[in-house]
Image 1: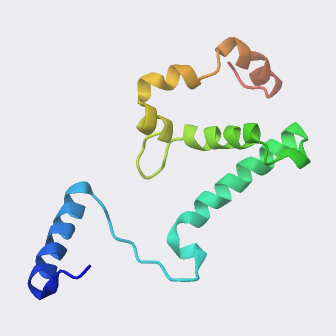
Image 2 (image 1 turned 90 degrees about the horizontal axis):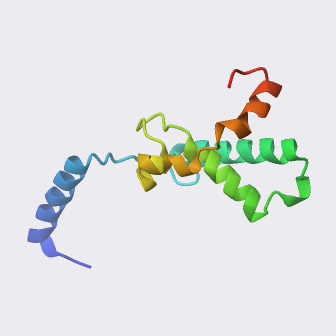
Length: 119
């Protein structure tokens, strides 16, 4: 879509001001360099959690099962984001819904005792 020479600079300033108000920062990444676009760290985290879960449950052939992938997604979204300081679950569902995602403490107690933690 072409806006013409008079409207393009105005549109550019509007988008810049809107980005400033919303706190959007522009990041330039190199084409063909997966390390430069910020997704590589997330992919590493997903693979690390998936590897740990598959190894702990001894299910190497079922890594792609929807239940296993859902658990990995939950673990990743349950952690506090270092840049925002907010859990993705809280950002999506609100912090009051955290009650529905936490395991009851009486179920965690035997697991925590196995690992020597206080629960």
